[in-house]
Image (cartoon, rainbow, N blue to C red; front, side):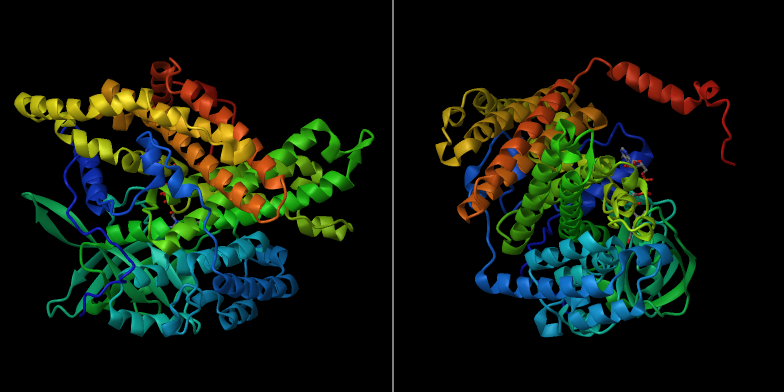
Length: 636
Ligand SMILES: Cc1cc2nc3c(=O)[nH]c(=O)nc-3n(C[C@H](O)[C@H](O)[C@H](O)COP(=O)(O)OP(=O)(O)OC[C@H]3O[C@@H](n4cnc5c(N)ncnc54)[C@H](O)[C@@H]3O)c2cc1C
């Protein structure tokens, strides 16, 4: 089997150094962390705009010119999106899809004919070969209309077989599997299990090599596998023979491409959810499922790294989908804000109505800026985007939820009413009720918001951890620590001083017009964020990884700074392309709101309530407040 991988994929192969002190952790936590660390992409071969923010540098040069599609790429995306929009409007009734939990097979056939399921498949294998930008343009459009269909398409090619195959497949595997996605094969990504959610170290589904070494036999259970019940191909993460690393047994996770129809695969339950109700998502049992050994993707033991790397680009679709839903909310609120009058004024003219519209419009611009920027960066391969992709997912899913909630409130009782009911009584069937149910999942799938903050903390702190690892390890002898301390002191004396006194703090940004003050704030706040991280490291040392609330605030600050940077850059781009002053005003408002949130996060780095909060949380868990649960009907 050839070991060829995509030449564009600058995969980081080097072994992960042991830079986090795990010696004081419980055995279980240590095992989880060691597996996660081994699966990290440890190298940074390209610059990361966001990581620089955490290190105190707002690098304008990386973000100043908002990337643009070439005329040729734009024409491809324009034509495809126009055809898709026309098709969806005429043929896909999203309310019916939701009510019946079914996407009509005729629609799926038509989408196959249009190439929707092969957008990410390279042209030489019969696909559309879309860039991430064009792919996300189509996904934004689809998500604005029918979230269930968007999830079907996205689970198939953002994280399903086409994406890891593109990144890690051999030439033989590509030739064998890619053409099938242009021709009625839907795929799925199977990582989660009943006992394995955010922490994959306990993965139990097992793949055992047969004695002749030609096949694997898979046994186990995968939960919530989107498209699983209808998939022709699945990428399944399995436990394979453990390896001895530094004298310790280390679990190996391996990714295998599995044919959906293989004997022994059993869909034991189709899951039913609050939203995205038409997705085919199930609990899947693997009973001695025989898979050819050549179906291993990338190599044995690389399955978790493959899954995490796939998600680094795969999770860029979700921000675009959230931006599509936010644009729909803006359209609904504009029309409703003008149409509905109460107390002598259109509801959009009351001050709180205007506030809602300003929030939705300005934050939709920010979501679009982030989704577009990260997609362009994914295409041009000149930056490391793992931090920005996680920020995009975190920001857009959280803000998307607030936008849908704001839209529901603005619509009053009609927001809560089903579109079919509105239609039946002759009103415009704005689907806010369905959109709210569909939107909530985005803060959970492809990494929960909590896990995104922890992921960000790990990646943002990587430069510090690499430098300070000898000092932070509790078990290191005092001599080693002293040596490491002296070396670090040399670096940090200069670096820390720069976070207070730096020529960049006096830089003017007059070219940014009304946004120049925000650029000044970005510059100064990146230094302040770096100082705060440094102080937290000094104060908590190896215990810092347990200070999740503090880390969460620091990561939110970094995420807001990235959102401000992307939004200002996008607004400048739009303003210079004949969109008038609107984008600048929206970006100005977004940055003012973002600044307020950032200042709140700084204030909350230490509230003085932490001890009480931890104490109360522990007591609630131990049942000390069970007396408050009296007077209700509990669930058996
Ligand atoms: C509709 C839907 C579609 C899905 N599609 C797929 C799919 O196609 N393929 C697939 O493999 N999976 C899929 N999933 C699974 C999804 O990715 C997981 O639900 C998600 O990763 C979270 O895992 P969990 O639900 O087990 O939560 P858990 O990991 O059990 O977490 C529970 C809570 O604890 C928090 N938490 C967990 N660990 C920590 C920690 N270390 N520190 C602080 N807080 C923590 C979490 O944020 C969460 O709030 C899907 C799920 C749903 C509901």
